[in-house]
Image 1 (tube, one colour):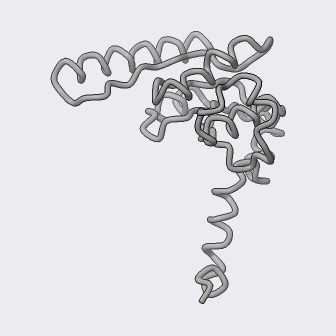
Image 2 (cartoon, rainbow, N blue to C red; image 1 turned 180 degrees about the horizontal axis):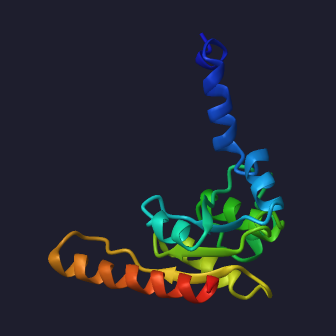
Length: 157
């Protein structure tokens, strides 16, 4: 039994998850709305929205291949990274006004490194996220958030 056929409201949700380039987003961009892409689910989106931009989760779910990205990554790189970077190279994320990337893993970190070499790229901040929970980690992360605030203020004025 196909649950999506029984619950049509889920179909729209699944489609939105598969394709971040939906009509609502494109209308917002066409009307001059600012956007910031990010790759970490715990991104403090409040900082982005306070700058007057809509946070957009970067993911390669609408990618049709990894051919272009494979020139930048080793064969052992995960498909998530390659598909996301392939979309970047394919121009699907050209509408972004900014991008914040993280040290989620070495592969996703390389998205930032590679993207920064493309003229006119929107990547304006790289953020380190602590891998352990401790008082030292909390202090470290607090400083990283302050750096993100400063970078976002500088990027958007």
